Structure formats: structure tokens, C-alpha cells
Image 1 (cartoon, rainbow, N blue to C red):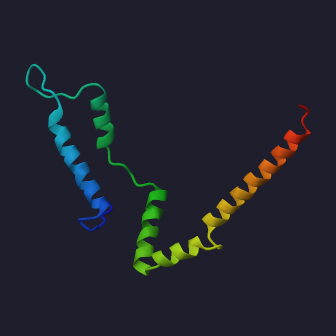
Image 2 (image 1 turned 120 degrees about the horizontal axis):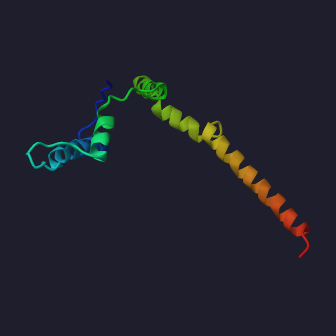
Image 3 (image 1 turned 45 degrees about the vertical axis):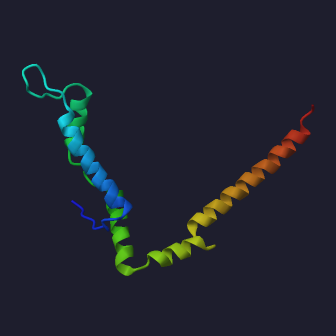
Length: 118
């Protein structure tokens, strides 16, 4: 189990509280049967069984959580954001290469279209 402390006024805290309210309000919404005993049926029972299982944390989720915690502990969040915005950033390089590839494709397409007979 992973616990995370957030500010009570943050978006994440508000969304968590809304989810809790939805869970509490959806529980008494099931209809009673003739005998007065509530029994889940159909898709709702299947979904209930699936959602009641504890989901295991995958390696990727654990790594992401560890990385986020490391960045917060070391105080390097802003430094990483600044570095990734510059020319040395991976995302910026990928975007540049995609633009070049798209431009090259357009040039080749224009040449092919100009060689075609009308």
C-alpha cells in the first residue's frame, strides 16, 4: 500500500474525496429482492468481483513512484523541467525529428505529384 500526502485544497485531494463519496452513495443503490435480501446480479456482480480484488503494483508503476519520490527528496524537479525544455531535452529532439521527417515527406510528395501526367 502506498500513501501519499497532499494538500487538502489540491485537485488530487478533491478528486479523491469525490471518488469516496461516489463509492459510498453507490453502495445503497442496489435494489432489494422480493424476500428483502439484496443480491447483486448480472454485470454489477461481475464488476464488483473484479474491482474487489487488490490490484498489484506493476514494476513500471513502482518505478514511476520511486522516481517521483526521488525527485521530491532531492529537490531536482525544477532543474529537470528546465533541462528538458532546452535543446538537450529528449522530447524536444523527438519533436524536431518528427517535423523534419514530415517536411521531407511533403517535399517528396510534391515531386511525385509534379511528375505525374494530368
